[in-house]
Length: 273
Length: 273
Image (cartoon, rainbow over all chains, first blue to last red; front, side):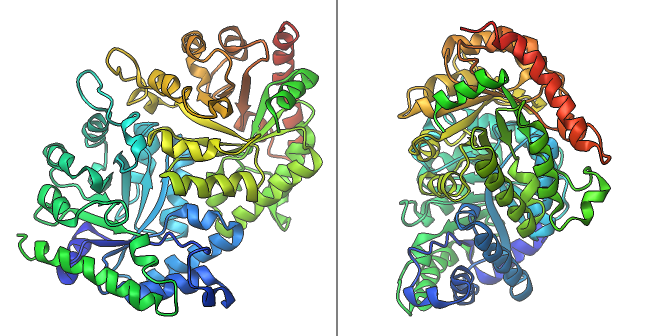
């Protein structure tokens, strides 16, 4: 998928909603457990129910790996379903990978080619040569952790580096890398006050924003400080949508939650360039 | 496995050798491709051939994920084989994971409980709460990236944080965490000159040292600057052992390479406390 196509979808759907498919067997409706593949059955229903409000889907690979082979199979079915039924949706493998060059190349091939994701999240700690192999793929995007939404973000990310925080260094250095136009960044929504500063450094790059909803971030604040003329945002919600109900109506309940977020977004997107 | 058991094995085998199972279908002997599961067939042969010289095995998960479901199955078979045939060997899932708390918990369960690894590598960038879920598992170890061996290590890790490099901050902060006795650190062997400084901060923790062999590090230097009375080292070699030969004699060739490294180590280990 190209950036233009993503932007077009955002405009068509008036949404920057990314649905996080953090599917948990302990939390999905009981009746689905009788299905041959409860995780996929759940995801399929969630996707069918939310696709008109969402421009992106983001399975966190941890939730699939936790179920071993069967989980991996569910992940494959999920991305295949998205690519065949809703090719207009942007897909994110939330894997937070990052390794030395030849190993990162493996990960990149696994997520981009074999599984067919549009993007993958990566950790910056190992630096340039751990991220560049992901950037080598055309029409694919790499989403690097910058300022995350968890408490531990203050352990390293905000530490001053010669009078500058590490995450700013991550932003400044990474935007000079080859194919940095394929970079996106994870920025936690609970830190909306930082968004203005981040936008001074990376005015155009897309931000993947987790932490809206259960983690307390505000869609309005994120737009206020983080939006670009193209929106430049993907705002994720996982639990708030997936587990809106754990009964047979879970898909409708998920749709309702997704729509609620989408309508908050629409108000902002209509005002964009 | 307990640390005492690992130390005992190091003393029995006189080795701190960790064999990196970065198994690549393009590189293994052609005849194995006729096997039903060439990756496992290759790993099994390598393990059988090297176990008397190695105290640890480290599959890098990227190499398995690259082959999708089949790769994941090969990884399962490999760890099961290690645990049933060579339970005295320490096992490392080189996955470089790290995510928000509940997601890290998933990864921890996947690697420690479902797969049964003794340890897993994690990235520190997201801080304390991304690592602690791994530390909650008794008799399991978490290997955090500290100073890696790739060129990108200089992008962030060595940046000064108020007159101190980030990786030192990683070391100092992480050793105050609950269950930090279950922490190990990745320190690239190509930076042996830093080992003395690292040992001033973490005198006892085990270091997983990649980069010996193909990447140019020296076993002698690593011992000189990095050894503790318990050795405190796991030195990894992947390509140098795995691809010593790509013919039918690959297992014997691997054994020979492993033995060569082991004998270098033995000289140092005999001198320890």
